[in-house]
Image (cartoon, rainbow, N blue to C red; front, side, top):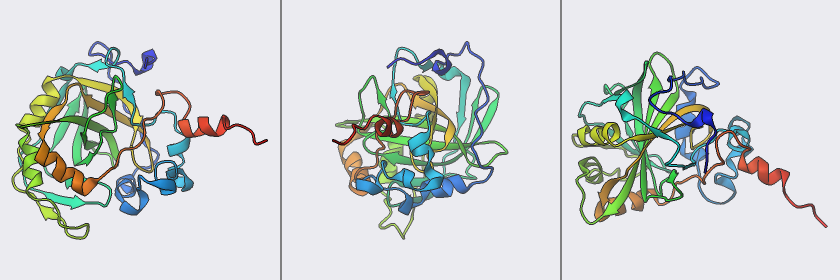
Length: 273
């Protein structure tokens, strides 16, 4: 897949401000996180999200996520990214469609060029939502940030994971030992160590593009930074996550800037005899 020049970012290009979302409050977070709004099966799944007016971008937006990333055209130098996340304990929730760790107010901060962001939460998708050169991965973590002094998500870091016989990714192994027992009973994590994740994100390269939330309301104006290389996760830890999450991956969207695939299908549906 090839991007137009407007979607290719390098460290030599000026970093442009992120487009603001349509609301100035945190309701986007609540709506995107609400379990009853998100299903991945049948007519209530991604093809049916757009039945609600507030989710119209899911079928009409032209910069939707996730996408297939072309590794030859979207590399972004991680040197322009500064990420600080203090080790901490937190609330770990089974939302009904994902596993989410609350991080608001925990001191997680990201600087991208001249823009500052604050970490709100991170959650997981299996299989991965993004693909690199058409290859999918078993697990993807989304770290959701808001812009400093603004409400609502504006930037997401996608960290990809590959299953291996053993793993040095302690963050996931630690979370696997404190899984929430039900959707109504959040767990409290043990101390979470973020330095290995930070080192990977800032040291291994990132792909950058302008996209959307991958859950309703599919709001656009989201800066995506996706890890160039996967981290590893051991089989037992991956299976622990998969047993709870099961499946929560939105189908791959069209090339940024091109027609939404649902709109394309509607416009090209064959006429009845």
